[in-house]
Length: 257
Image 1 (cartoon, one colour):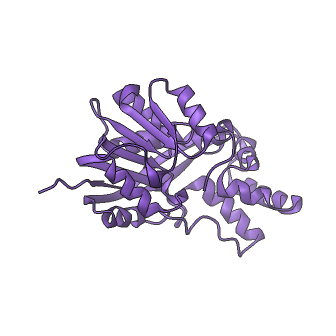
Image 2 (tube, rainbow, N blue to C red):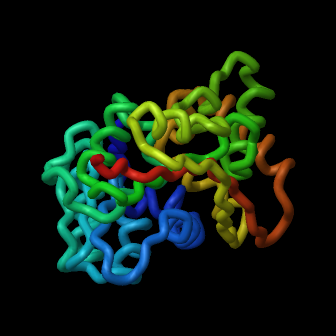
């Protein structure tokens, strides 16, 4: 799936979770000064920002299929090697990086297993591949769980995002093992976002970003209103903070011999 929304819309919808999630994933992946790293599926550059802060722009590469995200990421991170392309066919040579990371992208790859294999290919032997995706299967991503719960009150047949690749515990780890990575470790990362009001929560859903926004856009006005009311009833008055859990896994590229 390629995102068509402007970078600013993505920032308002999901990007507000990037600072805390990106720091957690970079820690989990062991990213530190002196490393060369690549952000696969960089979007507007949430994770890229964290990587640049840790290793310097000259040691960071990033790639995304959405041209508007690539443009935003380049503008925000001068000096980083930001390219337009897909995870399944990375444009770098074998063993180019010390670590390859991917945040909230595995669910939207055309072929997630091939994407993981490509991440492993461009990582040096002994280097790290790490990825994460929201817990959509058991409701650990509160923002999306609130929305899809309200949707199912209106349409019990709605599938939501629970079956997306990476959305259940252990799925990413299984893919890393299938790609031949060693010492695979699975876990969970936590993140959060702050909202000034219910409108600050709801309006980004109306911008047609990702599966939730696109689903909402497809509905009649009365159904959209019913879902809005369901979300309103589920959330606090005034400002509030929502927690989010992402499943994660990391593995080591085998060393020959």
